[in-house]
Length: 390
Ligand SMILES: Cc1ncc(COP(=O)(O)O)c(C=O)c1O
Image (cartoon, rainbow, N blue to C red; front, side):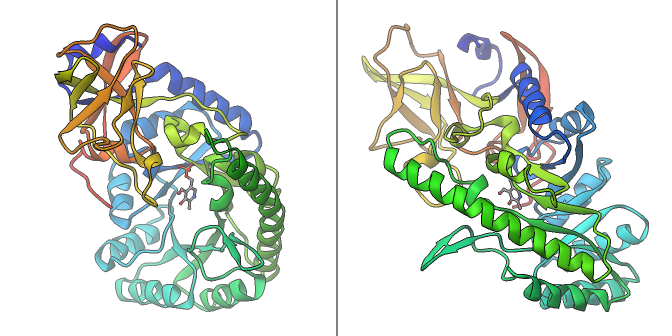
């Protein structure tokens, strides 16, 4: 991609490489043969991109959303089969969801404790609506004193899960629709990080050890829930970084995938999966304080999560350019060190990648669609649609 194609569009801007997206879609289709793929909206945050992916192959089915208001927004945009991936406390939005569910729209809310069940039941009884629910099970591993995984659901074995399930089964306004077990410590931990040979070995070992254990846990829990007479519409697992292991769990019917489509910087650091960078942003060079330091306008789009250098953007083009350790990517000014062979001057453009997938869409109202070296159109982002959920 030529950097100068962006000189004709208002800068800074974000962009999406259409051909690379198509290749990532095809790779996902190949990797997920036999299982459905639910797309993770948090990692896409663009209605037209999500519609494009869902229309591209029948393996793509349904969306995992991150907020009840987002669910309502997506229903208005014509989406169905929405799994709200995280518990929510937003009474007004949930009231609407309970009524839409009664009307026949497929929306599933996440629960992991009796309090969640009681809350949804109360709302459904008040509105005369109902809810489909999905039970989120803890998929973290514990090796002696060491917790390997995220801190989310409190229920991790069949008896703990059945207490929640049995409570839900007593309710005439709730229907157990699915089970989710997201193995974050496998899907979200890189094991091919540059200059971290030893840490990579440890991460790989722990991931292998954890994968075996958590797959058995998910299978046993699914059996226990079915053993109580429940028919599950879906069993959801995984994420981009665990596609290969989650695929091996026969109890899983669908894998949630989001980041693989845009393939941001952090997903370069996985041994088992390789996708192409699709989304980036272009900043204009607006000043040059010395022969090798070029300062761009904008750029401080830092990713969420534990704070570290890995959450900074990376310079995509020109290759070899680096952020300055003392300044990083700034709120309005990002100085970049470059001592390579390309001639650069004020008014030129530098290309960057975000560290994570969807968050960049909160900074830009559209993604310019690129084919080869041509801008062929644009996709609106959630922000461009005037939406802001989390
Ligand atoms: C519940 C859940 N499932 C799946 C994923 C995977 O998303 P991605 O493919 O973007 O890594 C996530 C990401 O955080 C998640 O929270």
